[in-house]
Length: 202
Image (cartoon, rainbow, N blue to C red):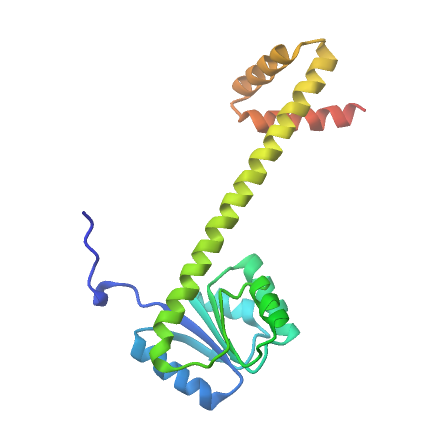
């Protein structure tokens, strides 16, 4: 049975705080410190978000804003694509369309009823849990898509070999497997090579 290390031995999670209000941000930073988090940096906007994340490598991003601007959502979408992180957003905007857009841009948790110090830790934990759940679902989706693509490529390569060599389906599959073994490559890679070669000969 694994034993969880004491709190002092665990890595202190770092949080990048983004808030246009310096006074409000100071309260957030104090609340984070009390909750046991390290403030990686405090910035007023998301203009250089990707550069900040690449430099600081924060574990979580916390944004407080009246309403997320189009630029903010675009910067978050780029971050989600290149360097995904759990994002916790506090906003006064209750519009469901804005909330959906924020979630699509990579926000893990969108909170509209204000930030209080005693709620920081559970809300960050929720954002991190949702982020991990989303990443796992995305991995599963990407894996399923890859397997389907590989299966289609293998079937197409078999069809090309059947036509070129006058083989039946079983013979074409055996030829494809032999080619893969001889080259020390996965079957789907060889299938893609066969398809590419066939396109060159057309």
